[in-house]
Image 1 (tube, rainbow, N blue to C red):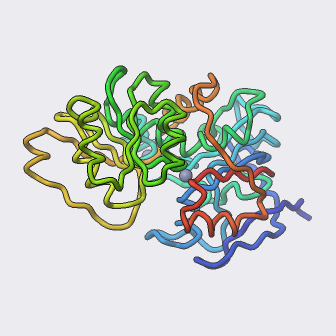
Image 2: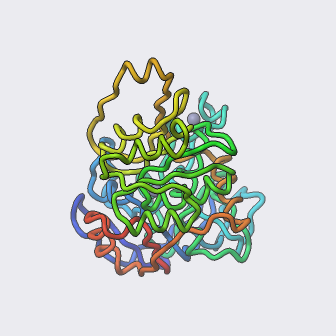
Image 3: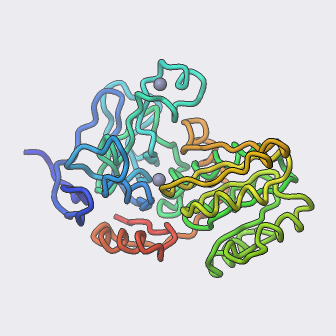
Length: 341
Ligand SMILES: [Zn+2]
Ligand SMILES: [Zn+2]
């Protein structure tokens, strides 16, 4: 009989998780079995469990794509990893590796990709499977709970900042200081950028300030965009929108500098108005950005390994998953919840 593990399982979309015993999976060719030590809860997990997006996960399934821990067993043919190595799974479970995107380091855009905790079982469990070429390689002795958010919030923020093309010494505005935004401020500082932060809650703005943001503005105050344009002498060179309110997207266009880039990573449902005249006359680039590829992940981990990025977290237990999801829906936990197994 198969050995069993505890897991948080979705049996029906939009219904509470059940905490139950599930068989510990067996790693196949090229895969490793990871004993999960910590796992951040992401908004995407909420969308997965609710079946919000087209191409729903197959029922029943285990969400979770920011799981970190140690290699517990190796499948056949795995090279460069051994039992006990610190690793983590990310949203990009694997991609086939043959298409134009995979060949050019854009495997996060591969249409043959699998996604952890979505199309394959994820890390809301004591064990999870990861393909060896796609697991994040973590420094030995890392703090697992603090490292878990790097596997999605970290790489998504880091890639999003790179996609603004803001350079060291220039300004980036980060809109939304939740799970993504708070690490984005830290990455941006580590990358040598000046940071302006926008949010609608004062404690999140205070966190941004403590993490090195030089300008903070309450996004709801009428003059917020003008305040940032003034402080940055013409607007931010890059704007990273992590907020989950469509209004933040329209606001971003008001505080970006001429020739600047607005990168969108937040995923609120809906649309936002784009003033064509301003976009044309000011040569504004508006760009979506989704997680990051394997190289982006390795780079994002390196910042954490060097101690330059330390996400603020709240530790919870696997059994707390339904409460965490209720809080996420209510917007009260700022995407900081990390399950510690
Ligand atoms: Zn995520
Ligand atoms: Zn591909």
